[in-house]
Length: 610
Ligand code: ATP
Ligand code: MG
Image 1 (cartoon, rainbow, N blue to C red):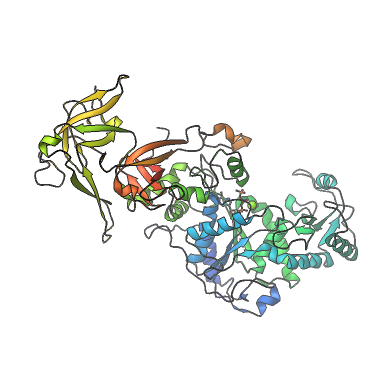
Image 2: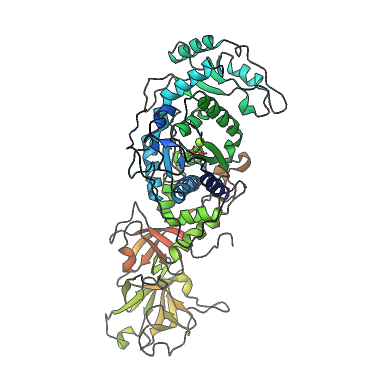
C-alpha cells in the first residue's frame, strides 16, 4: 500500500511534558502498556515503514517503535479542550514509552471534510508540541487511503461466510434488530450463499442500486445481548464525491468497520478512545480475529482501551454545537477567546504547558464526572505565575494631580522609575527591568479613591497617604468634580525623598501601595475583559438549549491606559497586569507599539461566582 511517509522512522520523544516538576501519575493505561512491554506482547511485530496488510509488514523490519498509538480526528471541525486531552493521552504515552503516535484523518465519511479543518488540526497538534508518524513534518495518514483494502476485506468476509448483503428497508432492519429486552430477528437475506452475496456486493460497488437500497452486514449474532453485535452494517451505498478518492466509490465503509482496520494496517498496538466506544469493542475484536484468521492482517492485532472523556463545566464540546455558535455569530469565530477550541484557548492566552498540566491534573481513568472550569484556569495561572512579565495597566482610569510637583521638582519634570519585570523569576533567569516615568499627573484606578472612605479603606482619601508603587508616597488632599458630581481629578501632594528604592524612602509609612501609569508616557489600549461564555455549569445537559444560558456579559471592552513596556508587547505575549490578572496581547488585532489590544486570560484568583 502506498504511503507518503518515509520508511522506518525512529521513535521520537516529542513534546516536553507539562513541567519538569509535574509528577506523572500512573494510570490504568500506563499499567497496561508497562505490562505489555514487560511481557513482550508486541515485541515480534514488524513494520514495513508505511501502513499495509499482513504481507506488507511481514516483509518489513522489526518495529523500532515500542508501541504505536494514534489520534484519529474526523476533519469536520476545530479541535477543542477535550481533544487536547486525547492528544496528550495518545502522543504523551507514545513519547513516554519509546513509541510513535500516528495522526490519522478519519475521513471515511465523504460528506463533511474541509481543508480548513485539516490545517487547523495539524496546527493544534504542533502547537501542543507533538510530532506524528515518527518523523518531523511527516504527512498525516488518511483513512481513505485504505478504501481498497477495506473493500478487499469485505469480499473476504463475504467469501468466508461472515457477511451478507441485506436488502431489507431501513425500517425493517430497525424493527428486526430488537432492543435491550428483545432479541433480533434474522433477515430473510441472511442465508444467501456467499456467491449470491458477492455478486450483489459487486453490483453495489458498480453503482447498480440507488443510495440506501441495501447494505453489507457482518454476520454475527442477532440474539446477542450487545446490540452492536446484531449483524452491524459495514458498507452502505452513498453517492458522494470524496475529497481524496473523488468519485471512485459509491459505497463507503461504516465507521465501526473502518476504524479497527485503520488501526491494524498502521500496526497500532494500543487503540485508545473514549468510553462511548466500549460497547463497540466486541465488534472490534471480532473483526480483527476474522481478518487475522484470513491472513489479511498481521498478528498481534491492536486492542482498544477506553477512558472517560473530559467534561468541563461551563463548556460545551460538541463540534456541532460549537459550529452553531460560530455560524449564528454568537462568537466572533472558531478562535474567539471565549471558545473552548484550541485556537480559542490559544488566543485567550492559554499556553501548551497549561494544557499539559490540565491533562496531568485531570488524570486518565474510566471514572466519569465533571471537571470544574476553575481547574483549567488554575493551570494557566500556575504556568504564567513564573513566566509572565508584570506591568501596570489602569483599567478604569481617573487622573491624579500632584499639585505641589512643580515646587518640589520643576515644571514639566519627569522622574524615571524602574521595576523588575518578574519578581519571582526562577534562579538563573535574567529578567529585564521595566522603565517608565512619573510626572505631575498620573492615571490611577477610579476605585482607589474614596471621598468618604468606608471603614477599613486604606487607599486614597483626603488626608491619607499611599505609595504609588515604584514611585513616590503621596498624600491625598481632595478631588475635583464636574457638574454631574463625577470625579474628574484626584488631588494630592507628593512627599519629597520617598522615591522607591532610594535611601530613606521607607521612612514615611503607608498602609497601601497602588498601581498607576504616568500621563506623560501611558498608552491607550483596548482591553477585552472576557468572562465565561455560559452562566449554567452544564449548558447542554439533558437536552437543554445551550443558547439560553449564554452569558450576556461574557465580553466587556474597556479602554485602559498601560505602561510603555506593555504597549511594546509582541502579539501573543502574556503579562500579569498587576492586581488585575493575566492578559495576552491579542494574536490577531494587537499591533506592537501603535495599537495595543489585550485579552483577559484569567484573573489572579478564582473569584467566579463569589
Ligand atoms: P465531537 O463530539 O466534539 O464532535 P468527536 O469525538 O466526534 O468530537 P473526533 O474528531 O472523532 O471528534 O475525535 C478525535 C478523538 O478525540 C477521538 O478519539 C475522541 O474520542 C477524542 N475526544 C473527543 N472529545 C473528547 C473529550 N471531551 N475528552 C477526551 N477525548 C475526546
Ligand atoms: Mg467522532
